[in-house]
Length: 99
Image (tube, rainbow, N blue to C red; front, side, top):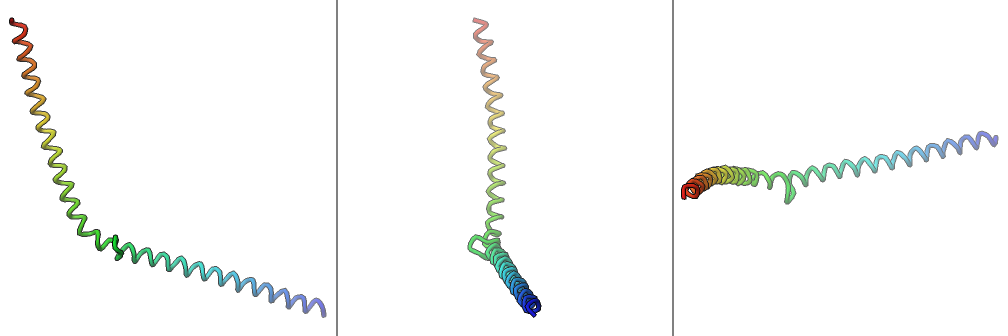
């Protein structure tokens, strides 16, 4: 009779352990799913979320385009100035050599 009672007690312990771990896993899943959902909501609708950032994308693209145009313009001016400087140096060398 003692072994039957021990078997029943062992079964109860195993069942308690299974239910305990099942509860822990469920709690972890709920926390993980809630965290993922909260992150998704904050990304989509938070103060710095995608909805607020979308209008800024067009503005930033316009600024980037303007900046690229300025860089190209400055590079063109540099090329012109470099060419003029080379001409002046050649003219100075010719003028200095003929004296």
